[in-house]
Image (tube, rainbow, N blue to C red; front, side, top):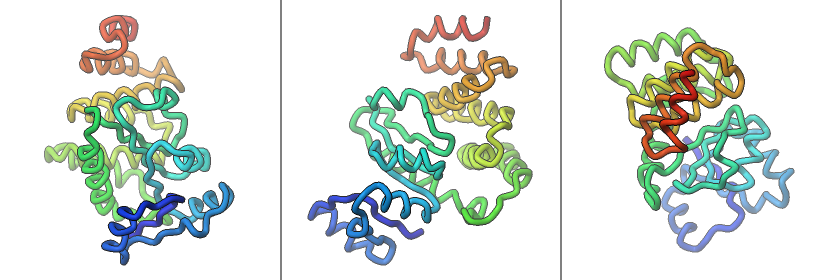
Length: 220
């Protein structure tokens, strides 16, 4: 992979780190003067990886595939994901960025599972079959990754999203599971199983918004 830096201000320590990876990193900050320049660059990228900045919202509004890294206590506006192609990677513990970065690195490494070329069309059935095979082999992380990419292709396949939420729950990534189920619920609250799965995810999280009340309300 080759990375392009959109960060306008680079500190001296960061510049030293970038020099170490000069073959894989290009700093474009000198080309950016306003949001029009930023949008033009984003338009030519395959994937945007960012923290909670204006770039996250710009890329999301452009419907560009974007990964946003958030702290445990994030801005309230990220309580719901407003963008179809934005994926949130959030801290599970305050101050623990290492686990977040490790997950991003793992997800990037798994792109090779589908020989991902963002410019070419990916076969939906092939992704689903791969996900099923990986799951049956016990390779659950890989199955979740493949299902997520399948959903990017067919966002109206709520059956795939229900399966993804269930797998994320098995992996202990309950907040991600809740986000998946909430996305379904906002669009189609009567979809079979979404209320029950959402309620169970809240209940299993244990420290969430009135979890027991949410559980009973969801399964009514």
